[in-house]
Amino acid sequence: MKKTTLVAGLLLCSQLIYSQEAILGSGGDAAGAGGSSSYSVGQLVYTTITGDGTVAQGVQQSIELFTLSNPELTTVKLSAVTYPNPTSDYVVLAIRDINLSDLSYALYDIQGRTVLKGLVSEETTQITMQDLEVATYILKLNQNNKELKSFKIIKK
Image (tube, rainbow, N blue to C red; front, side, top):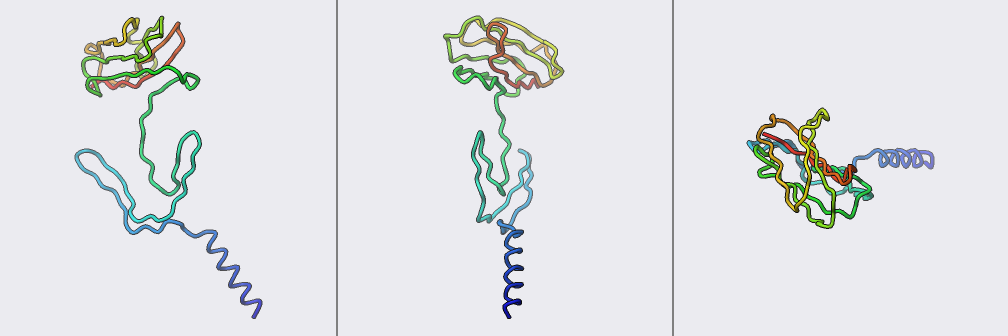
């Protein structure tokens, strides 16, 4: 009897180790004119891990777009604004930290070739993109030839 109870207990424990935490009521993929998404409904248990970022295990993660930047640079507040995004005419580079000096920008194509260069002398600098081909570009802001921040620009 003790042997049967022991075997039954071990089998039960082994099933708990490999069991699924999420029992979903429903889920699937949804698509429309605006895009597509996959979803799950009814998940009761999940684990969240935080560090440099946050991950919820067992939960579908969204795609986030980030500004490319120098990880050592944390004090400069810069932003690139496009009208509209993707742009067809120009990009406005807006700088919130006006104490910066000797700023310049360079626009590169996806293969790393320099397309445009210029100086930044005001809080807002308009960069004309009308003559450029439809593509994805990288806009880099530099101070004394040292990169401060990079931005992904889409020309349509």
